[in-house]
Length: 113
Length: 115
Image (cartoon, rainbow over all chains, first blue to last red; front, side):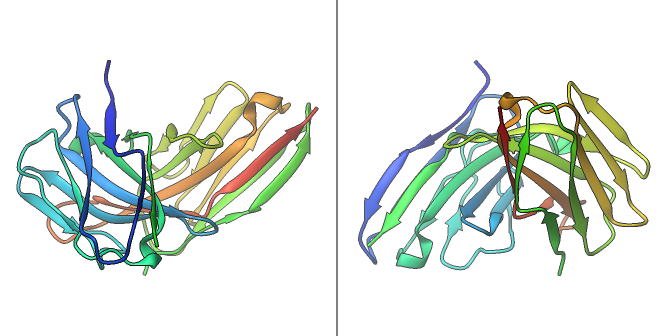
């Protein structure tokens, strides 16, 4: 089954404790992206990647890191999480030529205390 | 900075009625997308509109794009309860390396269809 998976689905952590949210897709997509969703703000793009080793900042990259060492994986790293990073995070993937047809993962709800 | 505005933000309508959701954006873009999100779920792609005058229809939903006015509409015909969801529009724009790989979403329209 074609899908984008994220882990964990739910996470409660404390300020400053490094964490990684994994994202994996099995559709051989070149393009992958991370978004955060907050009430009243819609989705905002954090980082995206056009292919292996090619990443770039979205609109809200501060406090986040990403890496793209393999085509299928695009982890989101929070080196020192803060409460303002409490949010619902979505990973998405698509073919480069069809960025509109993004497939979204199920979401990760992160709470930073 | 690209801004994408949707209105209304909340819409409650009766089954069988017609209504339109509007999506305005602030800078030139050639592509506009519509997504649907059910409560507690992820996003699902509905439409991609690639050029001025583009119109796409799926069931009771029809989306159109006017790039000169920087406006897209999502029209709902004879609404049914199953259409209750939050609808997002999104616009692409250039990144630093390649083509239009950045995506900016609107704030969403929460649609509730009342029996």
